[in-house]
Amino acid sequence: MADVSVFAIDPGETTGWCFYSSYDCTTGVTEIHHGFHIAKLLDEFTPDQVVIELMPQKMAQKISNIVFQCKEGVRLYLQKHPHYGYAEIAPGNWKPVMKREKLPFKMKTQHEKDAYRMARFWLYEVGAVPRPME
Image (cartoon, rainbow, N blue to C red; front, side, top):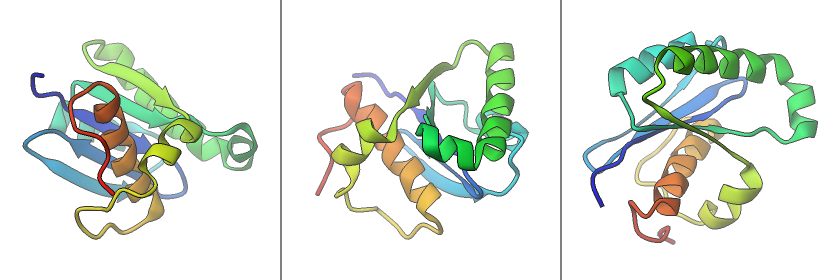
């Protein structure tokens, strides 16, 4: 399969993100919730696919403003840049598959770890990487 890159976003009080491709894996955390900081990162990394966590309803009610601001900023950016693929992934889909995968390096927050694992999950689902490592 050709090289495919993904930018995964785990919104929260500290929004974790991960750019993953065959030649790079970069992760980070931002406390800027409006999504435009994430848009700048998308300009920098230019992924093929953008993946964002679909928040469970009970959690979304608790931190909905943060999640909404991040997702809305990303959505507005993607409307202007339709060449990016976009998907939302529910935690119930990626967590059971990825929870035991070892991390390749130390990450600062759980949101950063989750963004990494979502990126790997999406790449696994499209056949771009082998089965998750345990």
